[in-house]
Image 1 (cartoon, rainbow, N blue to C red):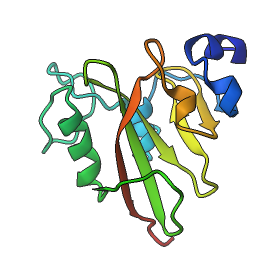
Image 2 (cartoon, rainbow, N blue to C red):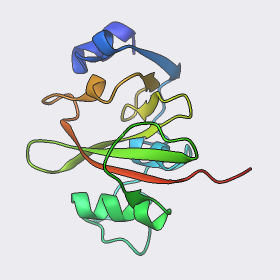
Image 3 (tube, rainbow, N blue to C red):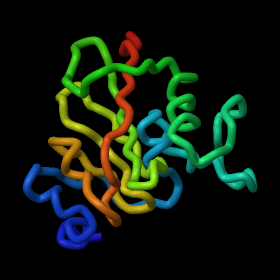
Image 4 (cartoon, rainbow, N blue to C red):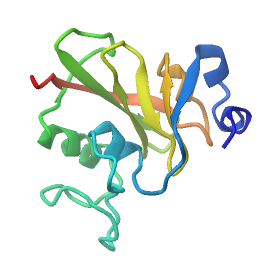
Length: 150
């Protein structure tokens, strides 16, 4: 998809700054990408068509999505400011409180997102993806964990 097409869905991106970092693929989604997985689509669908951590209830609730990242070692925090030694994830919700998106902070302070089955992008702000549908809503939860040493 072109930048112009992405900006139709996410009107705040052009103002806040972003770049496309990989081609579109249906192999994985934002929930997996934020967790560091680029091989599986993560979704709590009740039909078990997609991957979901086995110990987490398969429900489209903020609590289930939050628990998914807590299992990976993330804990709730109160801000999205870059902290040396930590990686952060944010969860967006729509006006009905349903999770819509996850983004991961990079060591540069920028954010990385997988736009559904579209491209991966790096964006300067969380507000770039905020807004009413088709944008992702608002940031509802911020989580962090220590960066693992290589």
